[in-house]
Image (cartoon, rainbow, N blue to C red; front, top):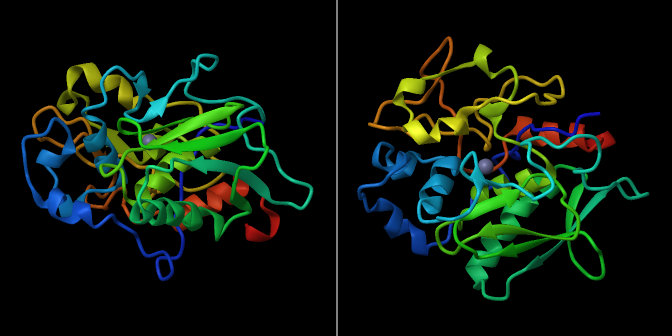
Length: 277
Ligand SMILES: [Zn+2]
């Protein structure tokens, strides 16, 4: 079975209050010339991916695909095949993902990241547990930018959540969802039925970020509100939109609070969460 891309999800908004490092509140209100979405999108309207692309503008030298996915040396494709990239299921039915977190984060950073994990674990069978002895685990570090590998790579795998640029719980959920095996929503194989890509508006050397892939869509609907969806102006050359929903171009795309209900559903399907589905 293909353990391919899918997407991320959110929890019921009533109990999934987004956490944002307070030091960012003022910062995000400052408008400055930016290469990506920020110059075209009101900071108050930026979704998780807009924020990620903004943080990653300064991340030079990383082989990032689609703006925030790091390719492992052994996996050149964006998708991962078979069960090799899926975290294993325990005999008790849960999927335990061990993690370590940099001691350099402050309390608010930790709360932000833990909220991002909780938004996933509280509604699925995927549980994030502090690593004790496990061989395979995620290492959450404040490197340069917000990025992750796709699926379980084996051994220690970094999820970078730079402080303060990536300190939003929705961004943490987004990157952790990559580590669970999900790709961006607009990368899915059937996306052309739901969105138009305006290639002429995309920065010329960034058009590769809009490829679509043979994804396992788990028989789920296309999710405009996925926390894994690019923003409307992602990689815009001159301020024109790069992704437009169809047939209704005004449907909001992407969001920032955390996994959407459908994102959560997809996690439960991919990991055969049984009673959670
Ligand atoms: Zn991403």
